[in-house]
Image 1 (cartoon, rainbow, N blue to C red):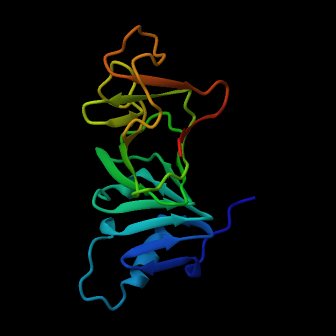
Image 2: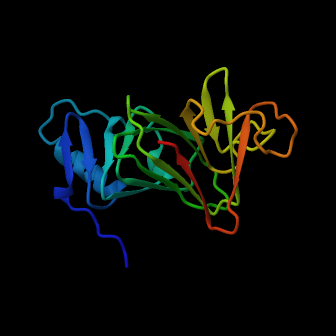
Image 3: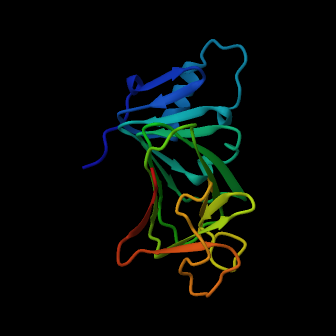
Length: 211
């Protein structure tokens, strides 16, 4: 059974932010909603500057090429789910995602090969400790490394590599999994603190950010 498509009444616009709730939404629906919300406005900014919020019950499906040039906009999750599917895209796309009080999920679909790269910068609102799920479908193993100098964690970087092994990497503030030099990576002391997760026969690796 497919997911119920979201309706126009399930999209609200307030304070420059588009909020989706209760249904399945795609980029075409988002673009139409933005156009309706801006009707009559004299000064129209690019859609890539639009703030989009996935509220409880919302399932937003996006393709990588649809997110190109969205660097100055921001997506938020507040109880909803954002699913991103790889597609042909030139260069790297940076996508800011903000976690709000309801938490939520980010799902990255499986891909054998893609020309594009997605870099997700995941942040939390102040005093927000809700649980967040990062789901990497079709992934046999996943790594995260912590840089004490910048106090940042990067998910998706393989050991001894400077670029992500797959099509997506996620950057997080702080060290949510308390990664240290003793993490198991097959080396007695890796150059940077790193942690590995394995799918163990499952079709996805699910990383849960501690609340």
